Length: 117
Image 1 (cartoon, one colour):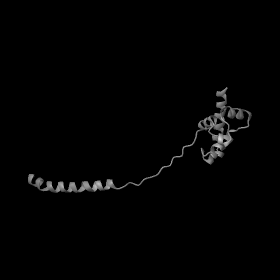
Image 2 (cartoon, one colour):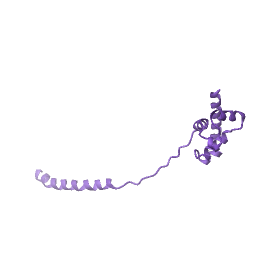
Image 3 (spheres, one colour):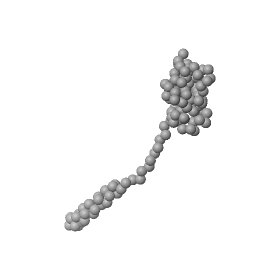
Image 4 (cartoon, helix red, strand yellow):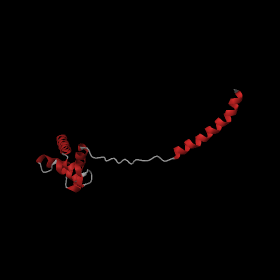
């Protein structure tokens, strides 16, 4: 039995060393890559806050007190704030027709006016 083992041991070692480079060659192959693009949009709270801070003044939305006064008297609507954000490239155009998003922005603007009192 020892003679048989001694006869096959060198062959076994040679075959094992031949397999290792083949396995390493497979690891060296590049795996296909997938590009994932994430689109991050503003939450209604963030949009209302940015408008309040004056980031939409270039689009005709006043900041701070002017925004709150305009929202209270109806001269500035949530839809106008969303449109200003779209024009300023802060939101995709699809949000112009998203009534639930516009309603949420309206709610956030209302809460900002309450907090300002």
